[in-house]
Image (cartoon, rainbow, N blue to C red; front, side):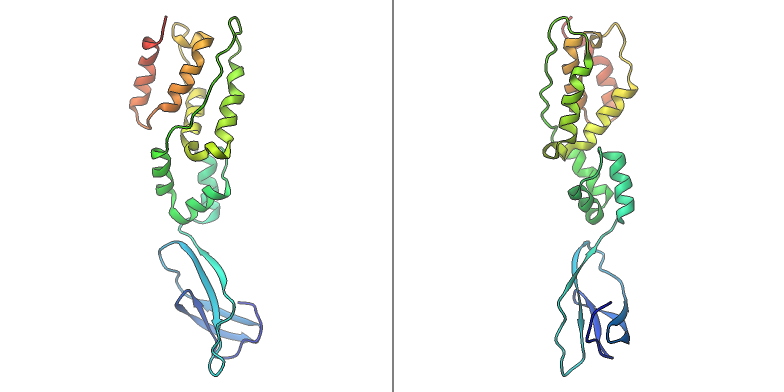
Length: 198
């Protein structure tokens, strides 16, 4: 702790927990202790011994269960890049809780355009996908968006399927976004073109 007017016998408190405190000089104290298991934000204060005994102005200390570096790496793999809200959610709530929330998140509404007749360029749909995937207002289901993007890079639809018809690409994209996170989605995708119009 760096401050001023510390005296020997001063104590550092993390929330209401008194830490083992060592007086160094009037500007420095060292303190060790264990933060509570529940994540959140705690006040760090210094209390000099009586007759003063008045707590210092508090300094807020975040208590997390995932360190920032690990949270950043996790979000880089499960979203299109972490934002501050997602980072805080993982650091304080943990990776498992973040994944649970993502699995339960509603599918974001994407209005893919229907390509004009005769236009054979699927790249027309890509800006719409990425605008939705990266939009802060649509980020509640970014894991689904990221999985859909990854599967789209892996799957190679047959030329005999509906995917060779450009006007059916919006249906394909919407179906991919509606998938549940389970092995059954692969079988559903394989069978889905049969239900599309011929």
